[in-house]
Image 1 (tube, helix red, strand yellow):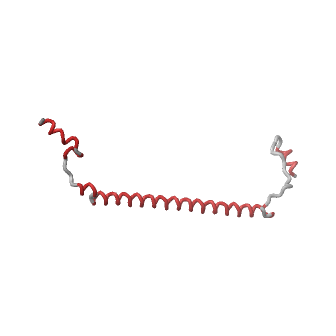
Image 2: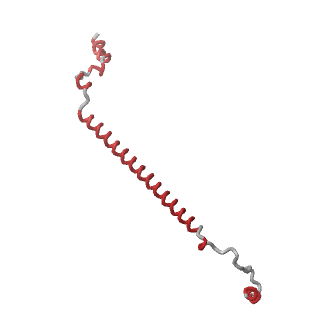
Image 3: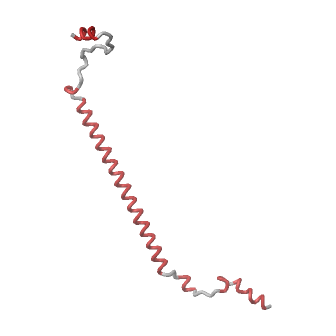
Length: 107
């Protein structure tokens, strides 16, 4: 009988350890502060990462626009007739067997 009475605590929650129910309902302030600190820290890190990615994409767009404008200017300059190479230049083949014959062809 005495052994059975000793085993009764197993059927209780927390194995017979008495706890104040108010402490179970209201978490302590240190854990709430710690949780808020973690949330704010993660939020700050996420915000900084988002700003960094936004700045990187803006810089990439700026670089792309700059490259496009440079190519556009280069194509405009290439279209100017003064800058084009003449298409009817005389030339001699570079296979030179006899230098005297080569120079005679040039003059």
